[in-house]
Length: 127
Image (cartoon, rainbow, N blue to C red):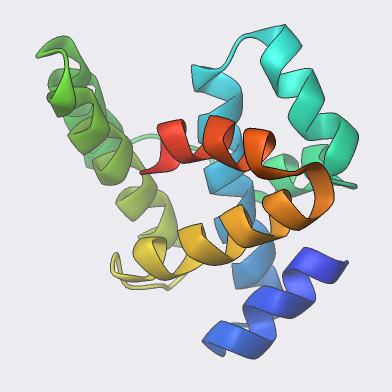
C-alpha cells in the first residue's frame, strides 16, 4: 500500500505502526465528517477501511480526555482530538509527537490522490 510505504520509509516506523497510525487519523476524519464528505475520501484512498480496522480501539484516559475537551467546545475539541490520537499512538508503541509527523504525510498523500480540496477537508479535521 503506497501510503504505508511512505510512512515506513519517511518515519522509520514498522508496517503495523504505519497502518495503525494512518487508521487512527482516518478514523478521526470519519468521525468528524459527514457520510457524503467521507465517501469522497474513501473514493481516493484505496484500502482506507482496512486502515481504520487496523487502528487500536479507543478507550482509557485518552478517550476520557477527548470527551472532556470536546465538551468544552471550539478549539478545545481539537485538543480532544490530539489527546485521543496520542492515546492510540501510544498503544502502537509510538510517541505522541509522531501524530504531528504522520499528519503532513497523510495530507500530502491525500492531496496527490484527490487534489487540494480533499486535502483541505482533511486538514480542517487534522490540524
